[in-house]
Length: 223
Image (cartoon, rainbow, N blue to C red; front, side, top):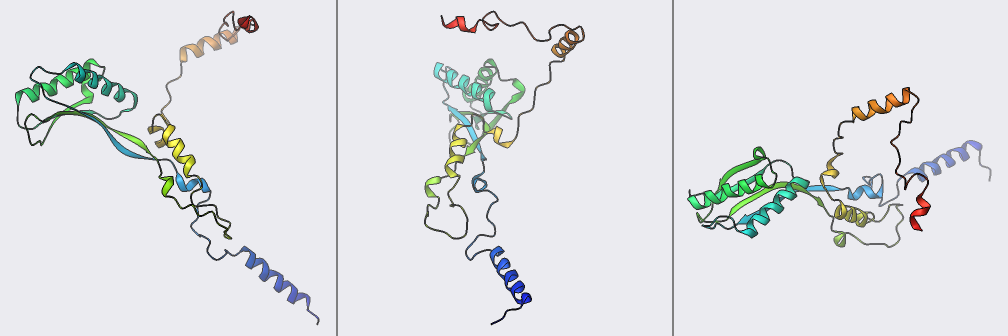
């Protein structure tokens, strides 16, 4: 049986189109890369402590807890620290709230970053609350992800590929705010730059002098 050249061309064209068509069961909305299924995310959090109200004021343990809260705020906090006293106008509770404010300022928190407020409490001697809003990394639950590693013909990766990597990264990031974006850069040291350019123009060495240990004597350090 003879087949014309035009028929062969049409047949080849049809096979090529069939090869480019998506296979049955493939996901048209599949991500561009397997790791994009599990992007790093953050979720809002709250770092807050509750301090019991004492007639004698803040105890030593409470002052230590307030100091630790101030340290955490300085390291990763943003916004304001809110000090909340129980509503009811109990003078001891109000005095406790202002004692917390003074302790925060003594620990280095600027006074303009501290907000005083009242909250509805069932008891006028309910604890004084102090805390600030923060963010934390959202760690995916890889144990609940699908783990079907059987044969597939869609050329798609496993649905759980990339989950463990993202979970490990989220658990190790010191400041989750870095996930949201890069930190602002500090201004350049223009004074040091002027000194370097002045030495360069004069033909002098523009680098800082090296320590004797670094200046060709590293091998002697292990004698």
